[in-house]
Image (cartoon, rainbow, N blue to C red; front, side, top):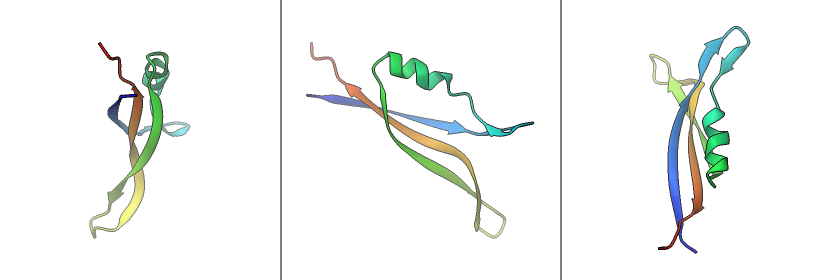
Length: 68
């Protein structure tokens, strides 16, 4: 079985309810056969270079590659 991979960077946005992001793309990807295999937090540094918060996520997805 051959696999193909997709990488997507998702950034959080400030809302009245807190940090949020639009995840509709993930539902669409699932309908297209993609499976989320990893989500890596993106940490932002402050002026001193010290991590202070998560600003987003790098997501890795995979699906079976069609063989022609």
